[in-house]
Image 1 (cartoon, rainbow, N blue to C red):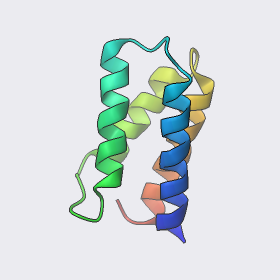
Image 2: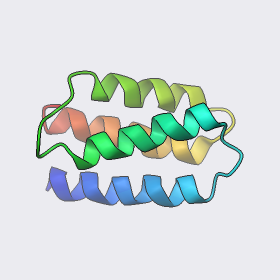
Image 3: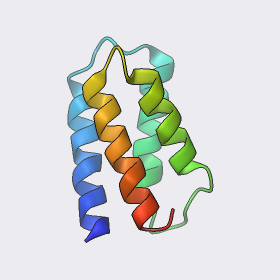
Image 4: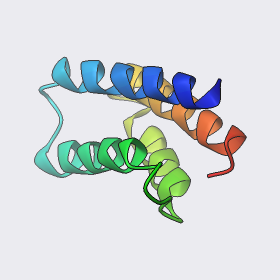
Amino acid sequence: MSQNQLKEQLQSLHEALKQSPALDDEAQALLQQIAVDIGDLEVGSPNDLSERVQEQAVRFEQEHPTLSEILREIVDTLGRIGV
């Protein structure tokens, strides 16, 4: 269940990124890396993935609340699957 939920949230993140052209290059790169890391969870789990996702959620809370909400859901899901 959690892996499917994570994949759905990852898809939501990709969609939100497409709709957020106002992100600076650094933010865009960090979010893309998070998306890649989440997609690669089956290969190996990065130790700081949840922490990086949480940091980005806080960073985007004011200017990009949709991205922030998606990232928080991803952090929750990662926690439930033990990442």
